[in-house]
Length: 236
Image (tube, rainbow, N blue to C red; front, side, top):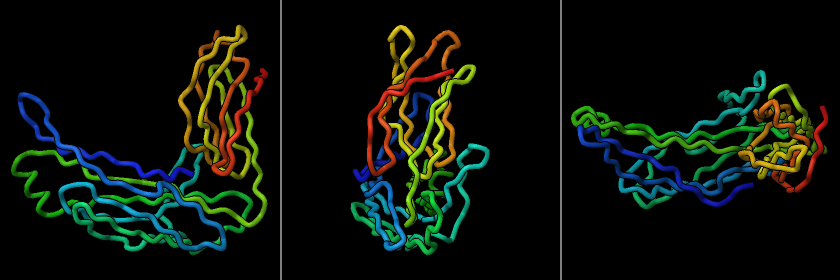
């Protein structure tokens, strides 16, 4: 689980003929993900306003799931953030309580996301209409994982397709490829972009040239509880 606070950058653009000047500021969220089990129905996160203005934030909860291997967000009442609408003054912070009201009775990790979205104020709208500024509002989403009481299988596999190498999460954990390197028959290798979250039953494809002849994968794989480094031989 990633718990280090991070900053979300927001820019205020002012259109001009000679350029596009901007001022930057940030919000800080800690932790950046939450994990629940059936005996811990309440967690909290801290949102810090490191800007020079008061911001109004709306919090919403979503089930984070798959539809034909595409990740989608569906509004849910399983998870409830409180408060749902709040203001944070400059250099102040807000505690957000997250309650999980539905137990996980299955054999897979349930996945959710909390969306924290800045709401425009009337002053913002009138000001930017007058000066033709473009205001990009803060929008932060972070994952929430609900673990069952039963044993969760940690299973996955690689396979070679016509023009790609594919990783499939066949178990019940959410997986994270922290480091990834493809190796060909001559021993040459190249690194691939890590994948932070791979949901149960999700397949991730990595395009490769037809003549690349990838024969193995070196990976650092985490199920968000343990992390292991291994080398996997690929077969046609």
